[in-house]
Image 1: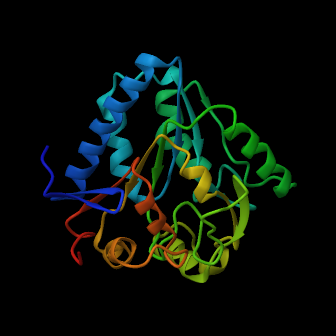
Image 2: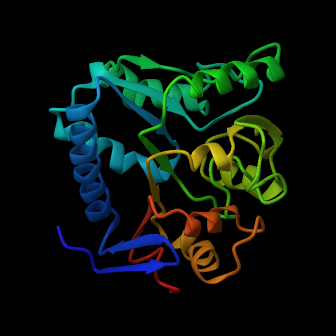
Amino acid sequence: MSTAKTFRVDALLVQVYHSEADMAQNVAEITYQYLQYILKWQETATVLLATGNSQIKFLQALLGLGQIDWSRIICFHLDEYLGISAEHPASFRHYLRHRVESLVLPKQFHYIEGDTLQPLAECDRYSKLLQTQPIDLCFLGLGENGHIAFNEPSVANFQDSYKVKLVKLEAANRQQQFRQGHFPTLESVPEYAFTVTIPQICTAKQIICLAPEKRKAKVVKEMLHGEITTNCPASFLRHQPQATLFLDRDSASLL
């Protein structure tokens, strides 16, 4: 499946597709080939998964390909809200259990326990788990304020000493979660969340960032043509030669 356009911005490879469906299918095929390669040389592959609307069509396409030996794949995820249970429909554990784990039964799926009674201890526990093996592949979405995972402009740190931390969510991000229908009211969106930090994300051997839809066009332009700064945390991907940003025509419309 051909791309509409391929180019680099600094070290970051950018691929633009005619539609989100084309993008999702092609990224699924790229992921399949990469995981097959990793599993040819390693006993297991370790994947760091994202959630959100940008991942849905891709995950459906990837799981639809079949033929991946998920019993050899260890899964982590990027973030989770503080204070909601795994059964909450907006919980990222709920999202991933229904869209991934229950369908393919990976070797292990390590979840951030968002409803823990000891949040700082949970950061430490998950940080230690992330250090048990290198991350072969990391998936990302792109927030409308430029965040990756929950590394908001106000808390992002390109030299972060933490691997996982607890952060306060910005009003713009909470409004985005509400607008997209994940919570019934703005007040019900949690104010705090766990996130894997930017330096930890960038340890991944390959990074795939999916950013379809017209509502992402403005931040995509800022990410690629603005300064590399924590004002747009995703801009740091321009320093990552192992990263690829995947766009559709709508999200690339201002480039």
